[in-house]
Length: 345
Image (tube, rainbow, N blue to C red; front, top):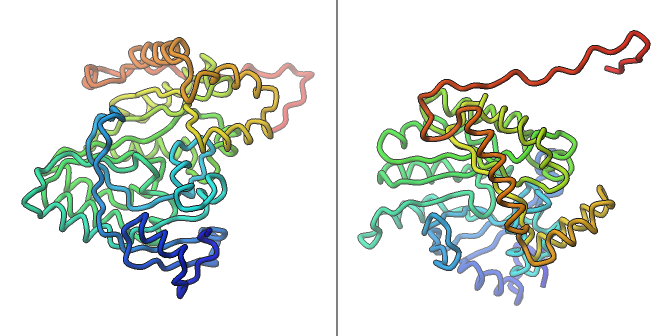
């Protein structure tokens, strides 16, 4: 049974399935007829746990995560987390973008977990599945309580986001960084505005995200950039890579980590549909490039990584060069038009 058929008083098998999947006591479905939330449905749950162990086979650089939301209104067509919505009998396309699960008791659950004698204070990563600073956070305000709990227990943590809303919690982040290790990364894969508007339609612009990096750095919080995804044939031209790394360097980022587009089941179907609509001439090239699975070939990944790392060295980005002066050449300026040309502004 699909969630859009669940009402607040629905005690059907669909509600039972939801409770079983989330170990939730209750599910309340809400919609808000305001411009920022129009078309989005929120499913509020009271979860029984909030700290999740990452499977060892995933080879992630962290073992524990906190995800206060499921589904994401950032609506990135390539998002690898889309598959998780199929477990709720929701589609991995529009359902993932507009049916958002909100764990309303996340802050209190985390505080209780951190106080447990069994908890050893391991690093907790956030924003690794869906963005914890997506649009819903503006209404539910779960992250202030989460950060405060981590601060009060001096528990190290990291946040990955595309959201500018993180600056609302700047004071809390500064307080936490004074007592524990805090790592912040902002995701910016490219600068192309036309590509951004179609492939990441619910996100702040790349320029606004780099402003977040700049502000955090100015307040003493080192911030890296996950240059992801680098999108083949649309965002991987050497000139595009150079412009992106130059802008990242100018923002004061402490590091840049490139990650090429990967297309897991759920995301692959949605992305390829988008590609067929916006760039049909690239469909066959993508089918060949991703013929072996979800990841681009190793040779392609190595090429992109090598190019970005070389640019990072040129512009002085990276932990080993934090104290070095940034060598950021001016962006190339367009040539002056010939007198006979008509320039449209």
